[in-house]
Structures are given as C-alpha cells and as structure tokens.
Amino acid sequence: MLLQKEKTEPPVIRQLFFDRILLTGFRATGKSLVGRLLADRLALDFLDTDALLCRLIGCSVADFVAEQGWSRFREMEERLLMDLSRRSGAVIATGGGAVLHQQTWKALRRKSASIWLQADEQTIKRRLITDVHSEQQRPSLTGMDPVLEIQEMLSERIPLYQCGSDFAIRTDGRSPRDLVEEIEHGLSLLTEKTKSI
Ligand code: S3P
Image (cartoon, rainbow, N blue to C red):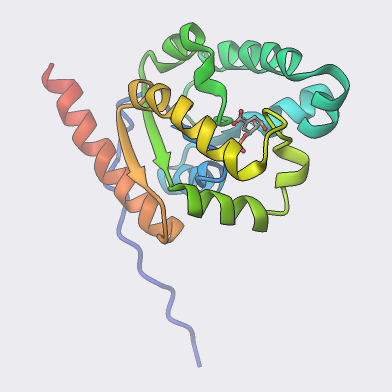
C-alpha cells in the first residue's frame, strides 16, 4: 500500500517581511519544538539560544548555574542576544528569561516579529515534569517550591512577555502543527499591519 504523502498547504508567508522571528514565553511553552517546525515551514534557519549558550559555556545550564550562578548566566545570555540582533533569516527560540534584558530585547526586536507562546500553570507544570531536558536546562530560578515558583515567576514575567511581543498564541492542548499554522496567519496579519503604517 503506497502511503499518500500528506498534502500540506504551501506556506502563506512567501517572503518574510521581517529580518527574524523571535519566540518568547515561559519555560515549557513549546518555543524550541514549534520554532524548529516554523523554520522548516518558512525555509528559515532555526536557532535556540539555550542550545547556543550550552555550546558556548561547554556544559548544561544546570551545571553552569551551579558553578557560576544565575547572574553570570544572564550576562552570557544577554551577550548572545545582542549578537543575534545582527542575524537575519532565522527563527530564534529564546530562553524564558530573555525578556529580562529589556534594552537588549528592544534591540533584538528591531525588524523582528516577536511571538509570545502562552500556557497556563497546569500545562507548564505537567510539561516541566515530563520534559527530559528540564533537569539539565531548567534549574530552579528561586529555590522555592517548583509549583510556587511557576506561579510567582509567571506573574512577574507576563507583563514583560506582553509588552515584548507583537502577538500571542495559546499552546495548551494544541499540536505543534496547529500552532505553526496559527503563527503563519498571525505573521501575515502583522506584515499587512506593518506595511500599512
Ligand atoms: C529560563 C528558561 C530556560 C533557560 C534557563 C532560564 C528562565 O529556557 O534559558 O533555565 O529564566 O525562564 P526555556 O524557556 O527554553 O526552558
């Protein structure tokens, strides 16, 4: 039986109006997974700031933070984000704390489309528990109880994600392919809006 190759619609976005696409949002909201699929779909490069940072520091986020602390990690992260502000033709999945660097985030957003991937506390908690990368990539940010930490950090960060993005996508219970389609639609609306300014 010959398997019929699933017909996928051609990308809505033929020509990307922006230099790059940024994915922002809390931990475990799907930035890396959706980012890779989106980049494939739009024939763009895919960059993951955590993966780039781990290559730079030569170890996992958890090991680096255990040795050198969060502020040193943030320094490295900010420098990388600044370098990426000169990069075009890519989808960039940023770490959940990238928006903390507000001036650098502003610079990175120039000529970028920035998309906020959202999920509620329950979804984030469940994904953090089931994601094999969590232990190495997501050490505790505060030393608090993990569930309290999600609540606390989410309420702190939501205003930053909101003002640091062009539009938001809810990810709870949705397939990555669905999310990519919705992002494409959002990008074409944003392109029209930006062109009309
Ligand atoms: C962090 C999120 C992580 C990673 C580091 C810090 C944060 O990335 O950069 O653990 O401050 O929220 P993901 O959002 O990809 O998990």
